[in-house]
Image 1: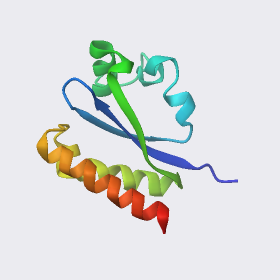
Image 2: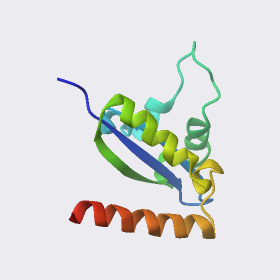
Image 3: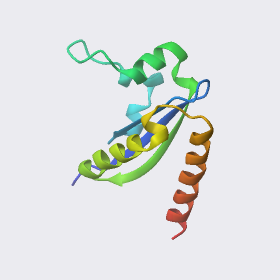
Image 4: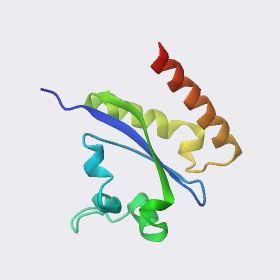
Length: 114
């Protein structure tokens, strides 16, 4: 049986920065105040979201699943898609980001009702 993945977003409540990722186990990924984002000693230590968790705390972020029930390949493409959106690429959530989120919510509502 093939593993299913989801694409998610974290939005900082204080400054609006946005972080996108994907996982096959969202409960594990988001557990223990985000400790699973901490890089291992032999991994690249430049982890923007882990650094933000260290600075603001995991509870300073809103956490949303954007899409679920994806194959690994679909999850990679969807993550690239969301990161490629102007607001997410800049990691900001200002006025343009508000418009983006409203449009995104409308799109999901339409998707779930059809």
